[in-house]
Image (cartoon, rainbow, N blue to C red; front, side, top):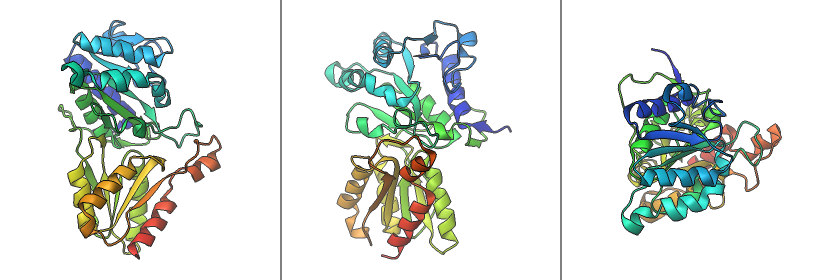
Length: 324
C-alpha cells in the first residue's frame, strides 16, 4: 500500500466528502486555478467545477461570512485561510455569529474553517502562528489539530460532517514530512478524543500537533536513560479529552504540558488547572509547561529554533521532573 502524506490525507478527506455530499464546497484565496498555496485543492476545480471550488478575493471576513450564509441555506462550506494567521480578520464572524447561532435560535452553522498553522519553516511573525488560544474560550466552536496523516484525514471528514463550526488547524511543517498507510475504507476520527502515542510509567507529556514528534523524539532519547515517558496526543483542543488527560496524570503522577504556541495564555494553562483540580492527590511533582517564548516568531532560522520548543528542552524538563 502506498504511503500518503499529511497534506494529501487532508486533500483525500475533502475530495471524498465532496464526492459523497453535493452540499460540500470549498472557497478561499487561490483554491481554484492555482490549486491552493500548499496544493491541498489541486485538481478539484477541474473535477468539481467552479460552483464548488470558488476562488475568492483576499478577504477572510468575506470568505467566512459567505460560508456562514451558505451553511444557513443548507450547504457545507469549507473556508480555507491561506495562512491561519489571517483568521483574525474573520474573528467577529466566527466568534460572534457562527459560534453563537445554535444558542441564539437553534440554527447550526456547519462550516469548517481550515488552514496552515505553525512554525519551523522560517515564515516569520505573520505566517507562523498557532492561534488555538484565540478561540479556546468560545462556546459553540470545536478545534482540531491533527498530528498524523490518519488523523488529518479522519478529522477533516468528521469536521465536514459536524453540524456546528469546526476550526481545523493543520501544521504546515508536517505537510510533506509525515506519511503513513491509510485504510481504503471510509473512516472518521471522533472530535474530542485524545490518543496515547507512546506508553510510559515515569512522566506524561500532553501535547498536540507538530509537538507530538518533539515529544516522541525526546521520549526515545530518555528511554535510553531509563526514563519511560508517556506521550498523549490531544488531537482535539475543544473539546478537551479530560478523561484521557486525567488518566495519564494519575498513571505517571508527573506531567508536562507541551505546546508550540507562546506560553502566556496558552491552552496548557487550562490543562494544568484541570489536573490540579481533579487529580492533585495523584501528583508527585509540579505540573510543568513547555512552550514558545513570549515573542513574535522570528524570521531568522537560528532565532526561530531558539523560539520554538526543541527536543533538548523537553529532555531537560523531563529529567528535572523525573528527579523531583
